[in-house]
Length: 489
Ligand code: TNX
Image (cartoon, rainbow, N blue to C red; front, side, top):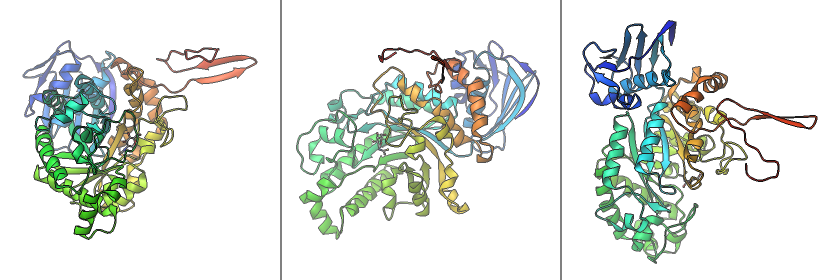
């Protein structure tokens, strides 16, 4: 960043010369300016193709206008996002030159829409807010034990049994909304565990085929898909043929986490499979399942992702990417096996955890406050320069078992922790510094989040007790409410 004296106001209607860029890269910018953007020759903003890193940009603001140089549309999207950020509260732009590019190519959020249904409009809002901090991947967790959320024309009992789901039309509109914001959508169909919503619709998919209901609360459930029956794989093939075609991006997450082997050990089909394949343990059935899922997804033209439980599977294809969620060690083991990893250890990246002891949220991975998120160093998972290339990026996870109330708790959980995570993904490690981040966050960025209409979490007020008087001081934006009789304020 190179700042100079002076500033320039954005005109009422911002004219843009597109150069060789596709018009879609203006869409998010125009939406943020209530449509006051026009394509024109000699525009106030000039876009130029340049030899700059993927997603990178050079933004030059002068008294006469703005020049954006980028190699691709996403670089232009991020440059214009920076312009929006600098003018979020109606400020004039500083005269400045910014050269910027992300450190990691994968900067994501995993959003659980099974446990809590976010409407298509709510998902779009999440996407727009994510792109404000230049996150570029929405890992869309669409199905789980508590609900199946994809309209499925060939296997309609899936969505009919759950009742609340996205139509294919809605899914397409979310994908398009994300695309013009430079964001990839990676859908997830978690298998073979976390599949109660599939089994509730089609009971024959489980080992013993008995009728069952959707789960009403979170957890790890023993009734999962049966790998001993051919019908299970025929079903998955049919399912993935339809669902893969719905999502144009080439990556597909097939889960693989938390799959108890309890039923497999008792199931005659699974026992027969073990015998036939010469398997010695149910763990080998799991690997067999994972490899078959991978093959089916490949046939549909997809590159696969799995949770880290799958990373020990021998024979995974080199392009398969692992989401390392247990801890940093799981990420290290993944790269040691030669597989690419998304670093998302729960104790840093799970924004469904409480941020302080009084919050609503999980605690199993400990309290995860903003400072803790910021402290994540993805590069620390390996000391080898060669293996460090396998560290593809970071992801936050907003699991949704506890997101049913109060209103907008998702925003409260996500911000400002996602701001910290975005910086972990974007900035070079050597320029990251918590004190500097904290000053920028509380000095200007929280006000911007406020101007963007995001309901964020504030750092706890400082409480003092002195000679019988309790006093509390907090940051701007906060309202302190209290009661003296132990009731909820
Ligand atoms: C673990 S992370 C899960 C989720 C839960 C989450 C709650 C992962 C792959 N599985 O099913 O929602 O913990 O924090």
